[in-house]
Structure formats: C-alpha cells, structure tokens
Image 1 (cartoon, rainbow, N blue to C red):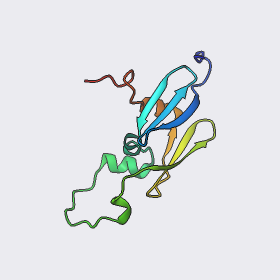
Image 2 (tube, rainbow, N blue to C red):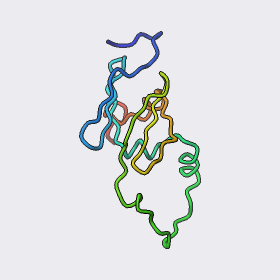
Image 3 (cartoon, one colour):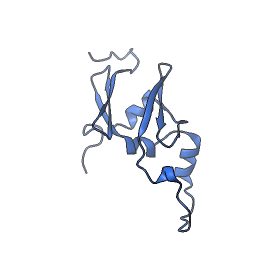
Length: 116
C-alpha cells in the first residue's frame, strides 16, 4: 500500500537477498536494493565520512590486519528507534547510523540508479 504524502517513509520489510544484497520494501511501494559493499563505502559515521573526504596517502609498507584480509559482511542490522538502522560489520565497525532518508537516497535499484 503506497504511503500518503502525510505518512512518514517507513520500511515494511527488510531481507538479505543472496550473500551480498539488502532489500528494503517501503510503505510507498518502492523496493530498494543495496550491495553490502555500497553501504559500507557510504557509512555515515564521522570517521568514515572524514576518511572519504580526506583519504590517507597510500602507504605501500602498511601491514594489513587479519580482519582486513577477509571480505566484510554484516553481522547485524538493528533498528534505532523508528528513524534509522545500525549495521554491525564483521570487522567490529558499528558506529554508522543509517537514517531511513539516507537509506532511501543510497538505493541502487534500476529506478533510482539507471544504467549509464
């Protein structure tokens, strides 16, 4: 059932599709699709935003930590009130709070991100 203009945008269903996609169905009838990689790259926490804006210079001698050698995956998606979700990642990162509006803007479905 589509949401009326006075109704807030809310998810009606969340599910994992395959090993690498999150699907959110919204109360306005839209079906959003996201890769976990895309969500991690767009993490809204302060440290991730800062790193995107000011990436550190490449260091060819940096030693990788064991958790950097495995593919990142979500371990939990937890609601934060009725306005956001917190994603906990396999490397322990869990400070990003994805608001519902932010999630909708990040949608990667063909309707929201048509092929170039």
